[in-house]
Length: 231
Image 1 (cartoon, rainbow, N blue to C red):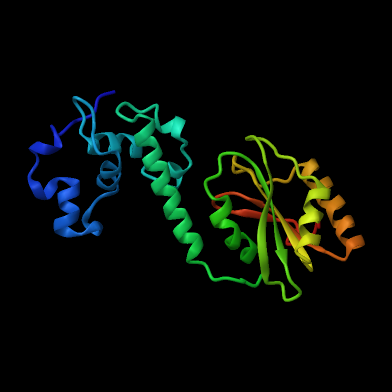
Image 2 (cartoon, rainbow, N blue to C red):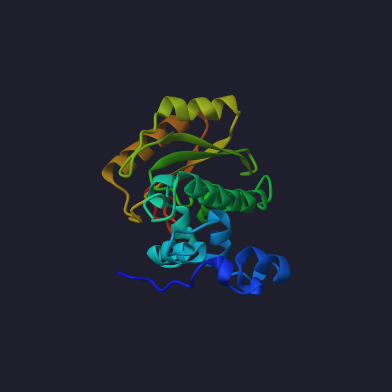
């Protein structure tokens, strides 16, 4: 496969070079490829930084959410991208994710499964492996804090009930919502998911810390045990 190149960036008109273009026209005037080119700074002998950025974007269907899922190792496979450049891209995307997280209001009140899903978007979006989290709630169903219980591989993670309820007891939580992601995008709960939910619900009843829902999270949708009537 070949890609058209545009010569070195230095040979372009000043207003078409990414850095100069940003200074002259503002950040909004730059394409996504040009913004990434600023991060990676330089290309190869026959590819400009913008060319390299276009190749990377093409590999993820020009979807920035998919780009954010790539690791340093994944990005380093592209010609012209070493570890340092890959780290710059990953760091920039992580800053964007954290900005979105900080923009969210504090002490959000959970009134439905969609509220819980939206609350966890900054924490579980773009994860390439499974993670298990709990949302600890006060008596008004306001979020006290989200807690990561465990992280595992692509196909599973461990959720220890003792650790889960230790966090809830330490925070004096009045209720909790369970959440774990499926990187595959499959929303169907496994038998293990159902068994774990039942055990945690029973334990919560004994400790007076009710389990209000269990969400299976994907980047585009979710499955709610409570909404489906199987909690």
